[in-house]
Image (cartoon, rainbow, N blue to C red; front, side):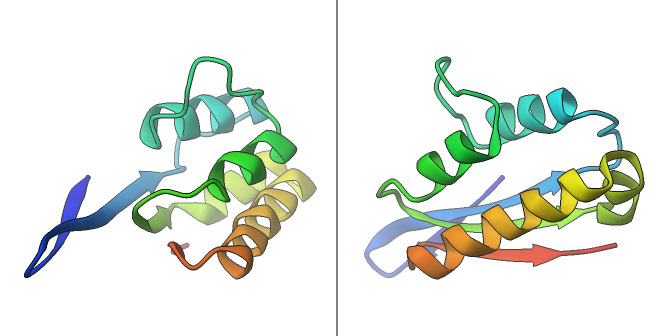
Length: 101
């Protein structure tokens, strides 16, 4: 995790999320919960992910790496996960995502 700064102070977070060890949906959601500091009540599903991503928060510059590995493990669920993040990015201006193979 790296803090993004401006002349006025911290404006957001730059996060690198390694999906290389994700083998199941549960692995994915636990990694997201830990990496993004989601609350204990996080529902560990794509609807809950969208809800938390679109709540007002500081800027998040999210880089997901080893996406090909996660795609191989999760199949269509990975595509829905990626679409959920991209939909949240379209909905709220404080998320930017980068997807690395």
